Image (cartoon, rainbow, N blue to C red; front, side, top):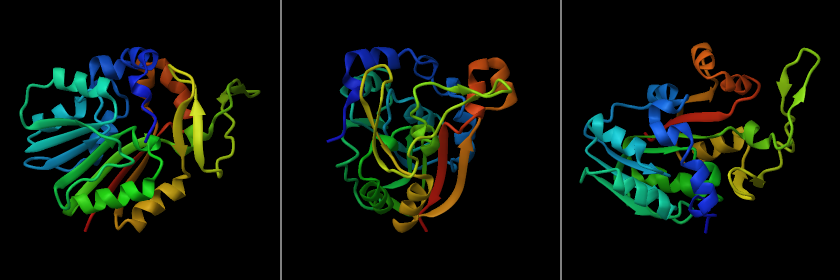
Length: 243
């Protein structure tokens, strides 16, 4: 079973104060880039894996989706999502993505934001999602960029020009990585960029678009702390298709 860090009281308290959790999708700098990857969702059946507070699930309905199934391991997340949702076409369930099974050809779009790096068996998950999608269906997801996850050195280094850099440690050594973020020992699973993409291809997906997210100059002007993300990619955005 996956680590359920989001039900840790200290972690959940800190996580709940992130701007994207207080203000929703528009407070996530990568959201415009994600939107550009999404297909037309009008009338579509969507699975939102790692749905959190349900921000994306509710947005999909606002865009005309027929139904959404939101899945999250955290009871705290699901309780909050249910409390903030009054739409009967959105269903939320507690489930572990490392064991989740969805019915065959039951969804037109599977979406996930910053969740798959918590999944141990990405091979199994990719195959399961491919089976759960209808022909012509799409998978759109974001994860922590493998380079960002591998930059585990506790301190940035300043070069002679004053720029900050983060040493990348053991990039090719895949497996468990632990970090301290709102709580000690948060467990993630590191896979190289090539491994992530090749496992999708092996599952039967056609890759449509890959983005290594970087903030725009306008976003940096509005939020100067985003400037450090220009030094290494923080997020990987992937769009894949089932023929």
